[in-house]
Length: 118
Image 1: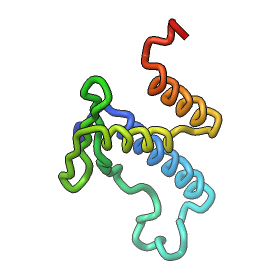
Image 2: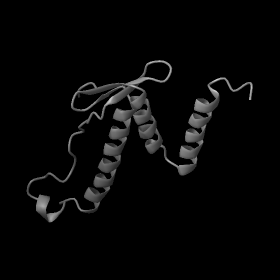
Image 3: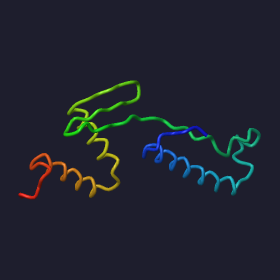
Image 4: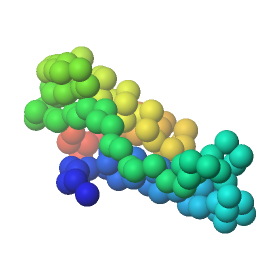
């Protein structure tokens, strides 16, 4: 097994792969021969895990952010920060959480990080 970076991106992809394996294992127990098209090849069990790198973001202090995306595309600056905000907000599970996070960002942009004077 090769070493992969210890990131949430890898963990999410491994979790998705494991869920598919458990689902497939249940299907294989119900029909051990597998689907008709796979009975002679034996390919109905599991495929090896493959990690796909979608890029990474790094805050540079303050507002600018650096991003390295697939295809050797690198970006640094405020526009990259907004790209990060949109990616982060799209990954949140519920609309309530999205709205709370976006409102926190808006409050921070409007009043700054120190809110003790509000």
